[in-house]
Image (cartoon, rainbow, N blue to C red):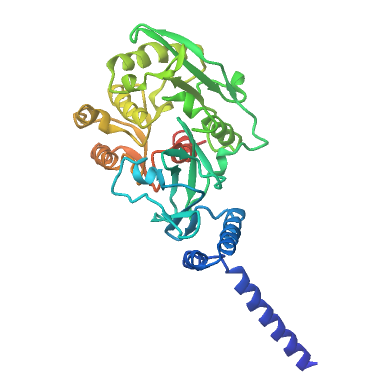
Length: 406
């Protein structure tokens, strides 16, 4: 009886070791991948070599291992006939940063191309494959991120985690996002369009906090900013108070291809007058919102981040909360730093974020120092991503909870 018990324990122990060994296998390593490619390249028989290359490619594709990632190493891969293959993306400023070697190497005897690179293990990066002169989405990578210019393929390093609240919670009731409203601006000399989001139950609410959002047509897009879904989800989860959001569109209402943000967001006094003397009074008279600065937020990214800083510091009596994402301070560096450095006392609740991969990092760090000098309440975030909606949309819950926590 005792011997049987010992045998049973031994079997359990051996089985446990076996299961543990299986469960820690992470599949092929990068070293094994490179060795496999070398072995395939060395096969003398053309048809055999092609069959082995096709077999490896099928395995990598089915297992979602293109690009191939391990720890801080990524291997970009492409299979096809070409004279030259390279990769462009956030990592080389979309070909603007020539210090990054983006040229692929062809595995001899095959039509497989590869590029090995090192990134932070939690990085998320937009990219495209460049075949000779053509830029294309990675044909076998199912992950992509939309930009203002269309979709890009997405490199997700092993420790990167998606933001679940960008997916609509089935039980979450949707607030109302009205169609575009036109407002004729005397200060700008042309019409501007905007949309307004009101939360579920708006009819029975009053004195709601409000957030004005620059580049609103992109922030409200589920493929880009995802702000409407995030608002619905966070209100449903009771993580934030019901909020009104105004999505301001810088495009010409008669020609969506004509975007005026370069003029409007460049420390433009006329645009400041439009926001504060025309748009805000219209919203305040038409919606059940609070007009207190502590309940009024402003949000923008890139040039919109520059403009958020500008509008906020010009109107500290109107805006109490500033969300500044990847601010393009370089566009009007002298003007914006002069404005902030000339400020001695101000009171803001600030969220500021920037990517570490060819984003506006140096200027963001300099502005962070200015905000610290002013002793402002601030949440400053650096993420291992580029200048991308993939980074900005994932921060919407952080922004909304910081500003409007219930």
